[in-house]
Amino acid sequence: MPLSSLTNPLLDPTIATLTGKISGRRGFPSQGPARMTGGDLMRIGALILIGTLMTCGIVFADVPPIDSDETGWKNGKWRLELSGFAALRSGRRSRTGDFGFVGSAEYEIPLRKRLSIGIKAYPLYFYDQDDSGEDAVLGVGIGPEFRVYAKNAQRKGIFFEIGSALLATTGRFDGNSGALNFLNEAGVGYKFKRDWHITAKFSHISNAGFASHNSGVNSAGIAVGYTFGCGRSRNVETALIAHAGRVRYHGRPVQTLNTKVRNGQRR
Image (cartoon, rainbow, N blue to C red):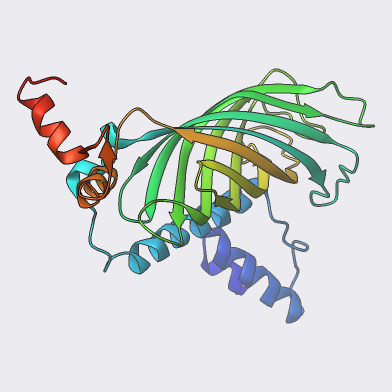
């Protein structure tokens, strides 16, 4: 009995592929070399994403959460970003000469001292296909973004990010027949003291095998953005109180001035 008949390919495609390779080596009839489909790539990508998130959880499990007044939705900040990219060779398909632009708006919510999650919207996605004969692709999307800051609780300096979004497009990528695709991104960047940041990004787009043709789109690019928010962190308030004895306003300490304002007194 061939070894491949001991397993159900529908229930366990991995074992079926392995047994097919073993049967071919032993002289039994083989169904040909196994090919990785778009669904296989998405499963691998999901495992990598889950592994990354688990690793982040293990690394930051011993980091105490910051004060509840500094976490949560009300302490989030808006993050605007504009990026440009050039397409890379994607599998057997050359996309040399393709380029594009992406504009995004994200609401970043602090979870721990160096960890945050964002809800990221892509109101602008433009992809120009150089010599493929296909029209340019326009799209919009939305999805989550995870970010880890390496330096401190102020969420400045070097950071690492990973995210995934559902992207709806008006056109079609060359070799990809899906109008809905998944935009997966990973990047490393630096956030400056004045809330500007720059990020080097790698992205991959595919429809996960939901359409008949699923040629992926790989690209690399640079993003520049700015972060702003309405709330004031408790770290800022603490710093003001700590320096109240040294900072003076119109000849009076800040702490004394604030006390008079709270009591309804004016200058």
